Length: 180
Image (tube, rainbow, N blue to C red; front, top):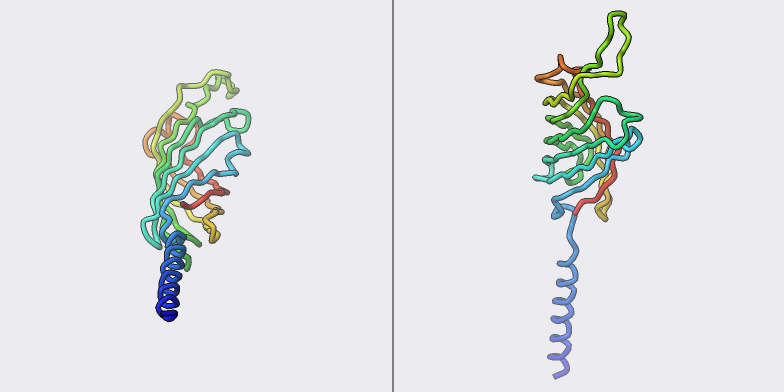
């Protein structure tokens, strides 16, 4: 009779341990990330990124940047940038990556100059344009899901570069976030 109780207690404890182990979610099962780019805050802008992990080596994401202070950033108004990343690290969706991106951006129009080449306070209307670009970087993920990322990218304006003072875009990121 005592042996039956011991067997029942052992079985119940195994089920309890299994239930506790099932409640923990591994990083492989977490497919979503949200990040804040700390580097852009230094330039009077705010950038948030959402990334959806497709598998161990690839992900899709989108970032949105808006300007809150024109003191340090005189050209850009906003950007929306979807991207695809290919990861080369040994851990799940982390390590070194290459990125292809497109960017919808709004920038200030050309500044008008007088006959002597001096800038006047007037400028042409804002210009909305698309760009294509490439980038690279690295992502580190802790066991608890916190993310640290550094990336750099460069792209070329496609349609309206002649209406603004520049013809290329750059991406710079030092981001922190969370995988869930």
